Each structure stands twice: as C-alpha cells, then as structure tokens.
Image (cartoon, rainbow, N blue to C red; front, side, top):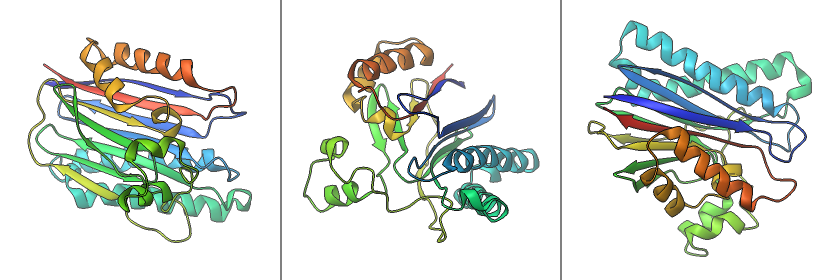
Length: 249
C-alpha cells in the first residue's frame, strides 16, 4: 500500500501568489501541507512558505529518529507550533512583514494512524470509497454562523464573513491547531484533499466525490476539479492550491 499525490499551487487572478504547499511521501508514511498567506497582509507569502517547509522539516527529523512518534498528535501539534515560532522569528528580523500570517492544513500518516491538523480556513477532506467522511471546520466567522444555525454549511462560500478568520498562524497570540485523528488503518481507495479557500469555494464536495470516483489517478481527479474551478472563477479570483492524495495498492 502506498500514497500517490498530485498538487497545484496557482496565482489565479491576483498579482502574486501567497499560497504555498509542500509534501513528503515514502513507503512508510507521508506528510502533506497546504498554506494560504492572508492576502490583506504584506509578506504573507513568506509566512506560508516558512510554515509549510518547517512542518515538513520537523516531521522528517522526528521520523528519522522514531517513526512511531512522528505521527503522534502531540508531535504533529509541535510541528505546527515550531512553524509558528519560525514565522514570528522571521517577522522580528524583518519588520516589513510584521503583519504577515497564514493558514495551514496538515495531514500526517503512517497508514496505521493519521492526524489531520489545521488552523484557519484551509480545509482537509477525507474520503472513503469516494464518499466524504470528514471535513475540517473553518476557523471563521462564517463557520460560527453555521454552528449557531444561522446559515447552512454550503452557504459559507457566499457568506459575507467567509474571509474573516478567527485563528491564524503567525499572529501575536498562538492558538494550537485543531487535531482530528483517524484511529484505524488506511485502506486502498481512501483519499485526502487539502485545499485553500480559493479552491474549495468553486469545487463542491459532491463534485469532488464524483471526480475521485471517475478517476484512476490523483492527477486525473485534480485536473477535473480544476476545470470546474476555471469554469466558475471571476477575473480577479484568489490564489488556489490543492493536494489530492490517494491510497493505492
């Protein structure tokens, strides 16, 4: 059993790209990371890059020492806190980017156990037999409206508060990520999608199910999803990034 992946990280209709993704995949496990630097803050592309690369770096170091520890929830949280510290250290050295911050979504797995951690509104979807079994809850005012029953989940995409985040990485106050755990071995046919809001705003969950079901590879599935996105975006659409990861034999 192994994980195969495909990814995109594109500028969209913006002047520059503040998304960043990184990943490492091996026969005994994987770490997948997608980050979205907040576009209203100067230098957030630095925050997203540091966050993604530092998580991969931390995971790789621990995995080399003790593969079992590398997928423990407390270590996954430590990867993200280390990334936060690196971002804040960089901001101290470079005052021009003192307002920069980023979202993060991270999946760490050794096939027997899996941790999904996130801060902000970059999402993680988990599919089993091409059906959505889990998705992260955005840290946004719109998600709060969903929890309070004011709007349905689907309407987050068009809600006026969708971009107002309640938690980010790199801010003055660190709030740990939400961590969700799959305490059972992954199976052939399982899949993950990690994606920024510039992607999931235009690709609906049931469409992702269809595209996974009709695709033999993650490249094919991701191509179909991007085609849906491109058919719907406006001229000045956001950066968009995604990793599609499939478990195969």
